[in-house]
Length: 307
Image (cartoon, rainbow, N blue to C red; front, side, top):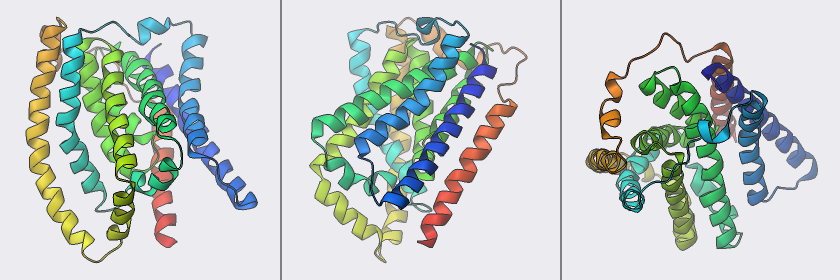
């Protein structure tokens, strides 16, 4: 599958997700009922998975070619755990930066998440979600883009699309950053399995923290509405910036080590010098998808600010 078809699939994902959200909102207003978050998560992931899989199958591409799932060394898997831990300050920094302008989406969902058994949310958010998203974004989309030879452009653009797919400004910010770090992990190992492990570890850690600190998150929500919150947010953002710089630098060193263990170091460190072909990754369907996503995200923030 080439980059044009991948962009078209992304447009279908955005359209389907926005349409689903609007229909769901109308249903809630009319019935005063809500959909369980675990069902909502499943449907949301299917709206990403089905368009990508349908286009993949329609054009006859082999799944394991476009979504490389080759085995990685046990040592590499252990290094991925360390890699994820080192990236947490970066995620917290970007999240704090976005919270200077918008609300934290995950904190707002804490009560719904803890309303279900821990193992169900772990499977939904920690395993199923990462599997679908890595299959689509580090598999179908990233690999389709890379057939043009534009490795850096493929990493950046697929990560931007990954952030936009969340359709809220808070998760867009750190989703795009994590997309880059997950994509680099795929480049270092040659396997989407590596990014799935990292993504699953990250999401699972979030689920564990939400269940372990449910009361704390509730207090955090109250504090976020207090007068002192903004001043403390500026200070904590500065502290996390320093930690993020140190953690990210160490994480990149880990990536080089992983690439060496997977016999891909020459390719990985040579990515900036990769020869590009004369293709432009941005097409009309992608531009339309991004415009829709931006308008939707901004519109949601405007509506929330008015309520």
